[in-house]
Length: 272
Image 1 (cartoon, one colour):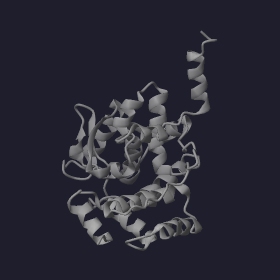
Image 2 (cartoon, rainbow, N blue to C red; image 1 turned 30 degrees about the vertical axis):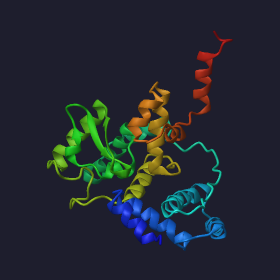
Image 3 (spheres, rainbow, N blue to C red; image 1 turned 90 degrees about the horizontal axis):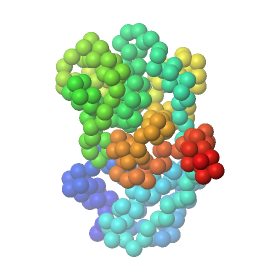
Image 4 (cartoon, helix red, strand yellow; image 1 turned 45 degrees about the vertical axis):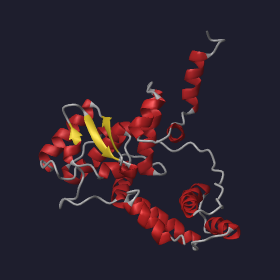
């Protein structure tokens, strides 16, 4: 008989998914509540999430996990995904990026935070990838960084000469050992996401502007939009971001109205 425990064991030891993925399944199963749901129970599963205030995006996140389990268990049922609103994700403006990049950090904590901001803006990596970086993952000679992404997949991403200067100065002074975490506590422990989020929001306020919604993820979206705005290929962007499908990349790369106007002037038959 199918069970959550057996499913999680197979995912952990046969599929080799990450601990974060296991936690995602566990949280989703807590909403479902039964190991052999019928159609009525699956409908109730979705309605309870909605009653508790989960948005369509959050519900779909749980629905995906449950559908994987249903397929594994041989159930004939599937939970239809909810229609999500098509929203332009928040980004940092060019002026805000300039303020963050050009601020003058003092001391270990400010310099660590400033380096994190530079890494996020220059590589488009996820916050979890940035906080997991070790010094040995940085190739200063070839301007490449090795990132460990979702599903324990590694990819090598280029970075700029400007970021190399910051990385060189910071590692020389604060973390000379190649096996140590790049952005760690004073004691060498990994930084927590909530601590980083708090510090980034405070940094934004010190620079005179309110942080955008989904602040840490906004760095990634800002990178994606500007990558395309400056002529980068959506196929190259897919590799840089570490997406398994092009559709995922398109969701990040919502160009604003002024970008569309500029492109239209170039391709318009009347303008030609």
